[in-house]
Amino acid sequence: MNRPPSAAPKKKSWSWRSQAFRGLVYQLLALALIAFGLWYLGHNTLVNMRERGIQSGFGFLGQTAGFDIGETLLSFESNQSYLKAFLVGLVNTLRVAVLGIVLAAILGTLLGVARFSRNALVRGLCQAYVEFFRNVPILLQLLMWYLLFTETLPEASEAWQIGDVYLSKGGLNFPVPIWQQGHLWAGIGLLAGLLLAWLRSRWARAQFEATGQVRSAFWVPLLIVLAMGVLGWLLGGAPLEANFPSKGEFAVENGGALTPEFMALLLGLVVYTAAFVAEVVRAGIASVPRGQGEAAAALGLSRAQEMRLVMLPQALRVIIPPMTNQFLNLTKNSSLAVAIGYPDVVSIANTAINQTGRAVECISIVMLVYLCTSLATSALMNWYNTRAAIKER
Image: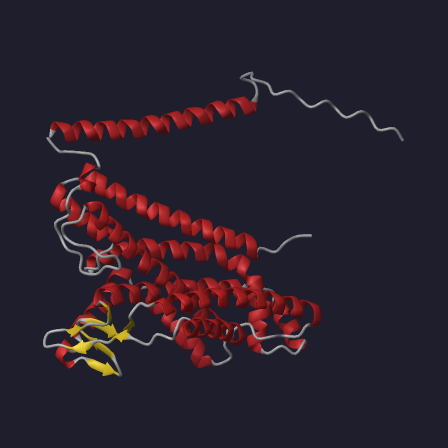
């Protein structure tokens, strides 16, 4: 049977009757209106500031800050610039956000999985945790943890001590190693161990798919990472020197320290966000058909294996998108650190505004910081979502 010749492709029409052409024109007009609106707001703001004698511009970033920052990972002196101060605030913000995301994901996943426990007490406690912390505003929780650390803990002279670790109103003090070449080798060993553990996990998954034999997916990889780290430490000379804290008359001196502000902020964000993560995980697992669990039980898999190998992998496609929202919320909620005195980027911006009067510029910097961190988090989670999605054949 002869098929009729296929119709020739239609040429693009630039006539107003063309729906595609009209859509293009409308989009260009919308972009032009948005650009004009932004220009008008910026121009009007600059004119009003100039009329009132308010200086503008980002030139102040090179000026001397003139204030100290109580908690820093980077060295900072009061005679350094505002730019360095904002960099310190950015590092403090990322410190809380990254640790908070990791800890909230772990705690929330454990709580979400525990909601399916056969033990009624465990299920009830997890549900009570979720309902309590999810329905109390995060600001009140931060204040609660901060008051708990600063009002109920003893003074530094009477700090609680476990070995060489001290806990007091001044924070948590602990020994820290004195940097030597051997620590670099230990870090290299840990990285090599992570690579070997990843390769071993891929091999174990391939063996499971080929033979059905389940191999350790946690303890053996963990042992590989630790063994490689110890091996690197030994090859580097096995350095043991450390800076130990000691009780002083007014404070615990030397060693490493976590301030009450940092601990209250991190604990509050993790506990609050984990409640939402737990509900996301619970909903994802509940979305998997019940027959999958019954099939896993029929194959002789234990409850832990059923959850790890059957339920959670299928639930990931439901869990990851809303989990991304919770990670973004945790990062943005870290801006509440200013309420308890933790020197994050918002706190640094407030101090800079009070000293320089550059409110628009400082707020713009803070907005840019949270925009970039949120976009980076979204990009990473979208990449992971693509990797975890079920591939159609």
